[in-house]
Length: 122
Image (cartoon, rainbow, N blue to C red; front, top):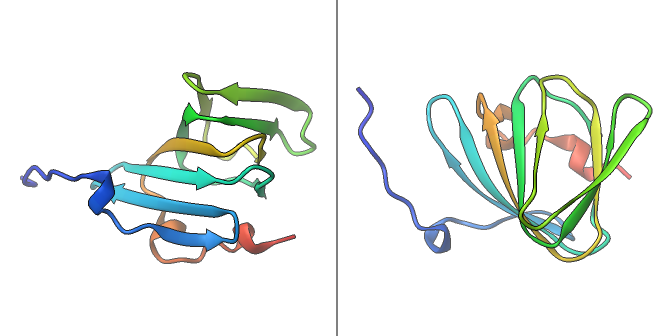
């Protein structure tokens, strides 16, 4: 049995992923919790992953393009949650400085081993 663990966000290392995006991660065996800090105008390029994703906006707003060709568009604002099923392509843009809580199941291995190259695409 895994032991319980206790974390404080302020104690977690803040990783700079791009000029306009930073994140903090907490990982368990079968899920991952992330604080993602996006500056206004930050683009998360189109990507997909096997992981189910819950995106909960604490501050700010993200505009999403969902689907292979971005056929569905919606804006998720503070206090709102977007559920992204496995393997659904999505792209996002921060409409203002944004704090986003992402929950993934299973954990994002590409985030853990730093092979999430889609962040660095133009």
